[in-house]
Length: 463
Image (cartoon, rainbow, N blue to C red):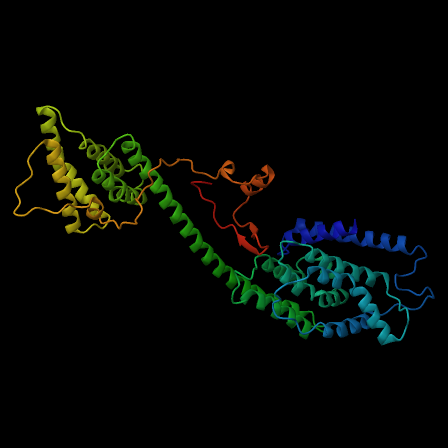
């Protein structure tokens, strides 16, 4: 019950982070009173005779705060220096350090005082326990990476000294020491070695911890100064992170817009040609340069624009030229349509960066085909023309892929767990669907490597 109330205090402290929420502050003070009562009840149940946890039972005087602070200062000196970024971290050992700090503290006091069993007042014992629970809470928070947990765990002694010097640290979430710890833990949540290649964030947290271990004796003002300094760093880091997120979001948005435009272009073209046995040249024009032209129109003007409707109408007219006209009227209608088809094709090809010589070569090949459809003789030439490869006319390398796939795409091409080779638990799938922008996710690959990432964008198109 004590641990649960301490955890509730930590959550309430996070909610009252700026110290400006009177409701959260009132809740925080109420939880503090409950926690103090619970600790007293636990101590009474453990020592019904009224003795303190470390009392000898002989009625000796309890240690003064100054004596406790002196012992803590010696332990604080033994906590330096901090190691560099570890390759592997044993979080269990850090938790053990928190749990055994009380024993280490008492061993230090025994060495200083010469007493085999020095007494600690109930209030001081509660303070030691509270600080211990606070840091156990941090080290059991899996949203904080293990290397950061190890760094933060080194602050237990300075924070125990603060709690002894200023009891308001627990009662007020706006206390500088509390706010600094909150900010350090919050910044640590977003850290990973992959995203902090230059160790900028890690080194800042480390230097802050080192400064507190080095500089803090009994001047609580050092926490205020470090809070101001770290807040400025976090703000600068936040702006850099927001810029990186913005760039990543824009890149993802651009990729999806392009993918969606390709899907729409493919649907319009393939729905008109898949049921027909078109000549290679005509099919190549539609699936390569004209498909790219459709994609470009979708990106610039949109699929509902008159330009897009006109470009799709061209596909129908162009496909119709594959049919041999029957009768004089159809023959004349076929010939009348060709100038408009040439005009639109020339404009479309120029838009997707076809050079004039390439456009003329392609149109020459198409004119030959159209004359053949009309039954007209080929124009006389001075020398036999070599056979022209349609792919070469389209300016396509032999190993190049078509602009659109030959299979009809699915409009709602959303994630389908049924297509996966592994089963996905429905609860896990729902957890993914419930993710919100700003949530942190930890990815674990096949070898156990972990990488943290923040969800910065959810597509409005695919979800």
